[in-house]
Length: 428
Image (cartoon, rainbow, N blue to C red; front, side):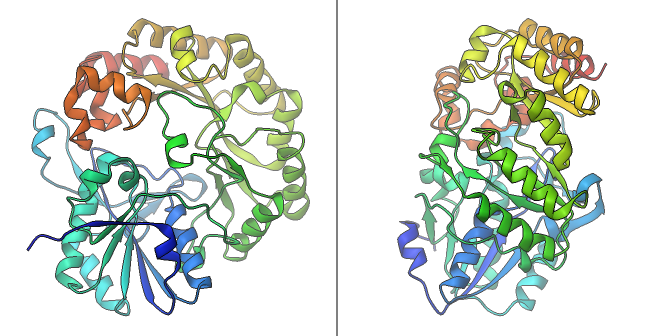
């Protein structure tokens, strides 16, 4: 019998009291997956709010619990098993895997956890819905009477598609976390911490979903961030990833005082990382020195392209001379070329491969390290609409939105051989 899925808003969720709630971070089904300080922050904030509201909460993180080794700065190597590729990927000559716990282990964990009254299942990338469907099928067998409530990025961006997976309810609305910190104590051992000084982004890049997920940009108080940091340090954390899309905004009034306080409290005990990329325009001499002095070890820079048209799609947030100056300031502050890893967009609709090569050469010449960021057409963005004009199937099949194969296998924008050439050029 098919489950009839209905929508649910956060007001209804937050009214729950006296329940036992299980939060699940599902496995990822994809060609590749790396732990880039990946924690289900939204789910963890929500679980903490539910606990404050008088509920009992627990967590099953199918990614973290499948760790089989360590990488640098607390990141983990995630175990996986090869699985059959979905038919839409049949022509792609790459192996496909499920990263996370096996079915047997998920069933064992569900048997160990006190029977919940509801399951909160989070979602990330739209093209990772295979792991959600797999998890829901297990839940319906092992906990047949327990409602499954699906939320997160995928359910917001693809609500009609999400209704077909078998969850009882899907959450498509917005909620601003209002708890002191995410429920990180639900992990048996926390490899690293995460924090956000803000939700959303004030810019409107044509390829980014930030405005769709967070319609309003909201800056948290520095006190909230420090309290969140203190709490996770008490759990043994030494590495922190900032999830912000605009960390350096209004840096003199917010970021610099925050860094000074972090350094005062922890001296050299903590390392900080910026996987989402920093706005290059904001990195002057003082900013570079502040980043270095506060303990920011992993720097990611957002350049995207030196092509004027592509740069315009990125809200025009950086110019050539600004990038050259920013890298120079970072090198003078003590960072190495390898530390100045720079995101370069690849595969945007209408993007010329020559412009990608030119941008790679430019980053090398400026003293940075190129890092290719393959385009993913995200529903609701202007770039998605342009891509869907050429490939209408994008609207109905989220698997086609997969950034690791979209440019070189699905869209036909470049060939696999050209992609490899670009990767080799970036590594030179």
